[in-house]
Image: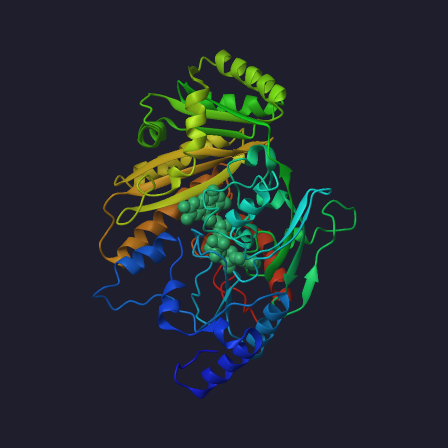
Length: 483
Ligand SMILES: Cc1cc2nc3c(=O)[nH]c(=O)nc-3n(C[C@H](O)[C@H](O)[C@H](O)COP(=O)(O)OP(=O)(O)OC[C@H]3O[C@@H](n4cnc5c(N)ncnc54)[C@H](O)[C@@H]3O)c2cc1C
């Protein structure tokens, strides 16, 4: 349903929403609609930046609703189904894929009132929380008890737990503790048609398919995750880091792969390509070196950390790394968030994008080279840099970026250039064994490429969407679903 602002039908629906959440928790204010029209998606920021003097508009919600719990979410979704109104769930709005933007208007469902910590269970080592909690708030509470989820993303202060679940987010310590999806015990979810469900109380069963996995990464298209139980850990007694420079990226990749395959269990490995070492490591850490910068870290009991540090150094020495020592390693840890915020992070008027992908150890270097080649040869105005952030037993994640200092002034041309680079780089990645994304999600940005990634199997995902969301009200236009 499309609304005319001054119609009585608008007021009738508004009244139903106010009746559910309370008048003070439903907004139709123009200033609030502005706030919910931009997330961290480059196009949404650029469009806003270039709006003055141009006849262009940003995606505006009709209603912004702040429900207190799953019961209120359920009622909102039932109203939305009755009138076929789109519903877009909004956590912190820190997503880079345009996933939380209300591109077809309708209802923004902001989760941040669902922010309670219900239970910290130090016997089972779990915490039950409302998904609207800002992740850092949860960490501060846990830290007071010497605990942590060990989910340590750069956006902890501006993203919600639900946002991370929706995007399959990850943090600096993922190599030992996993991505958010590895930390989930069970969830409460409100289905698009309003039913409230709970997944099984434990995540490891032999009771058929794992329902958690249907909703993790579904980006608000299959329901609203309202509560979650996450695993937690005791804060480690010791945490140590060491940095090296290797002669080239290939050597650095081999070292990273050996640190994993020789069973050392690092909590962090981060490897920067030669050009990112030259540009970003120099800017943030002040280290001016030629080659590929690699930092690794271990945490746990002091003696075990020392032993693992010793074996890791032996690998790096065998590969002829230049040892920068533990202090420069610890310096990286201290500055780990700086990389993602101004003045170190790229920003308007630059055009930039994080082309993150993941592949097996056999393919990852080819994926990097294929993306680099396509960006540098087809788009001479663009720079290409990359680092490898998250490591698995079978492969690792590539955090590649393109940067254009002076993109076209015309916003339509800017979008064309931006999207062309994304298409070309990600098609090259997929051809070489990569996928569309590792931890930022699909959203609006990559929606058009999702059917290409999945091929015939995308039909299964579409059927799931159809059966759970028959009126297609949940986050239309995202994750390859269209409207
Ligand atoms: C400076 C900066 C650094 C970043 N660093 C990292 C990082 O280290 N690791 C990382 O993983 N990401 C990082 N990101 C990206 C971003 O923080 C993540 O994608 C995060 O998961 C988004 O959470 P959010 O609460 O802001 O979600 P939003 O942007 O509000 O929403 C994202 C998507 O999730 C859906 N959604 C939100 N909540 C729910 C819910 N409860 N139920 C169902 N669907 C929901 C929305 O509809 C939308 O599709 C960074 C972003 C910034 C700006």
